[in-house]
Length: 266
Ligand SMILES: C[S@@+](CC[C@H](N)C(=O)[O-])C[C@H]1O[C@@H](n2cnc3c(N)ncnc32)[C@H](O)[C@@H]1O
Image (cartoon, rainbow, N blue to C red; front, side, top):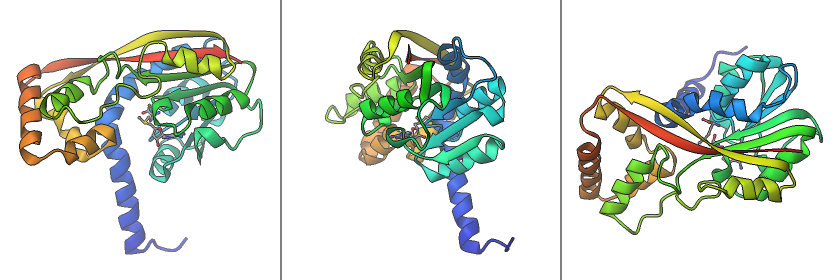
């Protein structure tokens, strides 16, 4: 193999910076969420069965699925190339591909379980994405999705959004995104043709040694929250940080976050 060029090296470093930024910002909550969500999404699914992780990101749920089913039985997809590279590197032996939920590159009835952790609210067409997840799942298999409770104000970003809205009420938060309110996922899964649909809240609690440890990833520009913070004027940014420090203290503290998890049978 040829030695990588300087440009290729720079690109690879940048790719891993994107994945690392995601892991420090959201992975710290989605990693402990994964085993709780897998418990919901793998009910009745034998450990020898093939399973699919839709919107895998750098591979937080993928890790839990590999732990339970073994890498050769796990397939994962994400539309973002940097995440696909990160997940494939972390989970050799799993089949990791670049694809969106709305156009899954798999034959009908390929998997016993299809899971999407923290993805439905980012899909351009959640109905089409869940319909595709149903299509690639075998009859009797399970389709599941979870989304943080942005609407109910108990998600991992809820304290941040409250502070931002206190400073600038014109900002659009994530409270009305699909799946972000109790009952949303039940309606979406039912509309996608799944049966025996149920929905439960899943709560994780994450410890932080200091306020700065919790806050710093918000300054990386990751996700809707990072972009919204970047867009605030300088004085507004400082006010948001002041409000949050007054609410949370200097640390140590724990932060709990709840997601809605819906699951149905094809
Ligand atoms: C909040 S991250 C969740 C990543 C991972 N599942 C986790 O739990 O940490 C949302 C992921 O959904 C992916 N995504 C966005 N739109 C998507 C779509 N239409 N189909 C599949 N994945 C999508 C993003 O690229 C991103 O990796």
